[in-house]
Figure 1 (cartoon, helix red, strand yellow):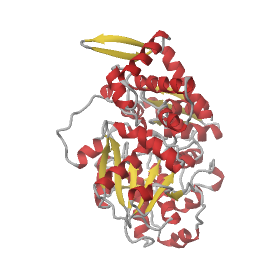
Figure 2: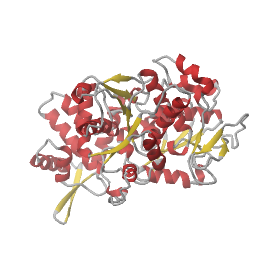
Figure 3: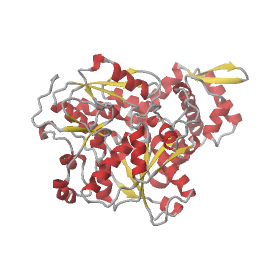
Figure 4: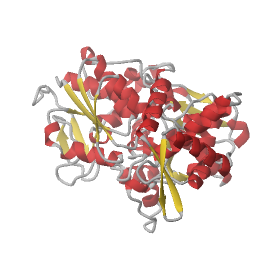
Length: 483
């Protein structure tokens, strides 16, 4: 690793809060003066003609003239970007929205939008002669970084929380990344990376801590404008808020050089189980503050308790005249099913929130029939065990096949609550369609097989997954990931 990279013509980072300029000589995300976020100010006026020449079936690196300069010899690619933004097959008619589109980021190499950031960050690490990379994430970024660093034989250390979709963990392992589990949520993993001086000689690929992440992810906005006319609304899942900020930045740059007249209204989506950005958006300081150990959510990809980009995300939403919406957990499974059945899109739970959002907002008459709306699908259902619900709705399997699927879904739910435990009633509330009596019969059989255990606490019986049960889910997710 080159400790102090030599940069001819260093680029400049600008503090969003105080406007102070900093030379881009090291990976930093906070202003040394006021603590505000740093980002690159791109002056794209001279590149306006290049945008018009990019074809619809573009790839990520077609926009490299908008990035901090990286020599061609250092560019690493697995074919990221250029994902489809296609018209809805059936929901346009159902919801009376004439122009509804799905921007499908599952078509990226490792099946998520994070491949854009991985391509740029690992390329940049290589250009600065780093041979070690570190990344703290909820899984998608970790899987992407592991894949791209593996391609270049760069040592990769992934820091992940306990609460992570097992399919993402399987991807990280498959790409031979070193793995360290810290805490219950990604907040703990990020804090570990920030506070650990032993990681100072690693290139920082944690998305929230590297301003190049915004540059990579803003290309989603560029592609949408290249693929369809300027939409009225964009619906975006929010964890740390950095994806929404990325899209705002991309649209704003296009507005500044008069390629578009205005920024689409941005709608930020979170689960009701964990919605810190939405709570602050509405100044809802009376909401119950949950300990990370007590949170139950299927949308693990956006389970963030201390979102670093919270204030900036709120500012971007308000600037675009957009809004936010928190989705009940029991809307997630049906949304996964609907996306598969009606749109042919296999989405992870975090992504399925965008479809639930559009249906709930339509009930509130948020959209006009002539509006153009884009739902962003950020990651594939192959990464999460909750896809079993969607799979079961598609299969005509009866008898033992459907019974096994039901047992695996119950086992997945118990795994989500492995620290605190879960009651049979809570499982029934999440799964919805199956009777409570059937739930308890399955629980009994899973306990006999040693996949779960029980503990009486007051009037409640709590169920916990065993090591054998975890091995079953690990094996399942590895299998799904390889499909």
